[in-house]
Amino acid sequence: MSAAIALPKHQLFESPNSRSIEVFDWFITASTNPISNAADCDALQASLGFPLPEMTFGSNVLTLEHRASGWKYTFSTDAALRAVKNGELEEGDGGVKVGYADKWLESRTGPSSTLPMPKTVPTKPYDWTYTSTYPGHENRDVESWSEADPANPSHAIPMAELTRPDPILFYAEIPLFEDELHDNGSSNLLVRIRVMPTCIFILARFTLRVDGVLFRMRDTRLYHSFASQPPLVIRETSGWEAPYDRVKRQLPKRDDLTPLTDPGFIAKALTGLPSEVSQNEGANTRWRGLGSKTEIATLS
Image (cartoon, rainbow, N blue to C red; front, side, top):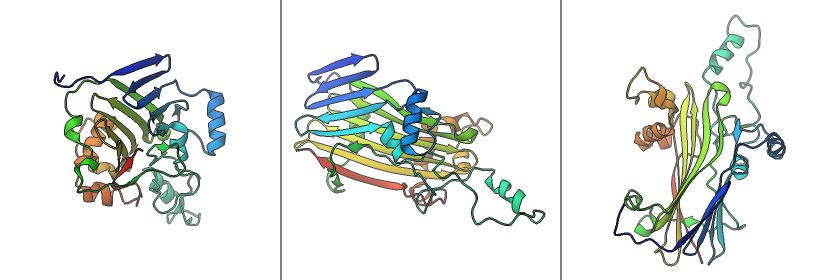
């Protein structure tokens, strides 16, 4: 802990399923609840129009409110799932076939088969991997974000500050959904928030593993320095993807596949690859979520 960092005046609030902090002009609430019950799942599924992930935390939400400006920003399960493609996958959606799809197709369309070759492999009419590029959302019809100036250091997230051992005033993990993809891998979206004496930092991470096919990750990072004048929020969105075997080659022990189920290992493996591989070429799905973008919102 850094003794040189003065703690700002703040107040914490707790209830059985939520925690909040009031600090400077901010009021932040993290609501964490059990997996949605059957009635709530039925209602949400009817609204979305496609089957829900196995573990859907429909009441989980993270809300930030800057009271001086009235600006609000939210991460919610409902909105995250609405960013999942509902319907036939198109160019840029990053559609994924499971590892045995080609063998399945060959067994039905090979030389010994009497079945005609279909134009496409039959797929579900939604993105069964629950890939979502959801970056959170504002309470305004017109978004506040504009492109960051790469030459302006105040428009970049200061990683050195985030790695300092400063006191943590508030911390929460908010899972939004998770699914094992019918035993073909894993898909999950988790939001984490830290409030420190000098700043707010949020990481929302979508992680996808499709066994034998690919790994995919989408990060949204939000950062605000309490010292910024006028108040400034930085949002960095980044997407990575790589073939399954490319990540598998980075295992510490070739015969131990356990790290492939660890989002931390997956993140380190994907971000450690050359960007032309993980953020441009990817796994040849042409997913539009690849690459990085930094934006700013000035609160006034």
